Length: 262
Ligand code: HPA
Image (cartoon, protein in one colour):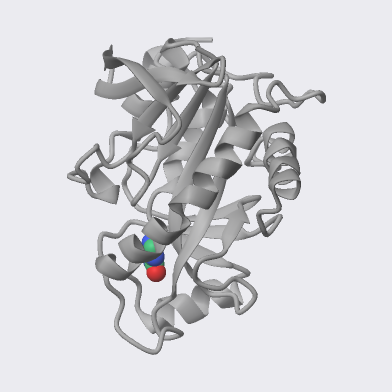
């Protein structure tokens, strides 16, 4: 299986995935649950980041187990979703956005496969954090399907589970952030360390704190996600149908073996 979808908040249903198997993959970091099935003729995996019942908060997601499991199953391309608040007036609730940069404001999350010791000391290049070839495929699929998609944005990752303060949001905006969420880091980092091609389509579910006219709530996030689920699934199906990319990328070059020495 070469392709997988990581579904974030509000995206628990693999949709057009014809599920045939559920795998509980035992990894050096704990268990990860991956569904596998077919989309069209292609074998595709689906991993619900927060669990199928949204029982795992963002700071407790076992990101290393999840990415290790996909790597172990032979996955090469990963399409992920991320619910986000917007700090940029150009990105409105309901919009779909293809991430191209991130800023990491998390603290103390296990964020690497290369923890010294057996795993070695590895410094991974993040000049282009998301796979350019996979991003191009998603952008092309959006054009072909007539689904509006912002082509780039900087994602700010916080630990959560609380939402941000208006002061934090002002600071993130001053720094150049466009969207804020709680999960894309370290997932994107681990994917690159494992040599996977990884892209994220963010869904703007709300204006960020202090920009929103009302207090933020998880219900509001779920409501907008429910409204955009069909478009997101259509976009992913169209992107899956365009794999593999015609152009190469450097995501696998210099990648390590998660959990072990290179
Ligand atoms: N902040 C952080 N994470 C989020 C938000 C937000 O406003 N909306 C959806 N996920």
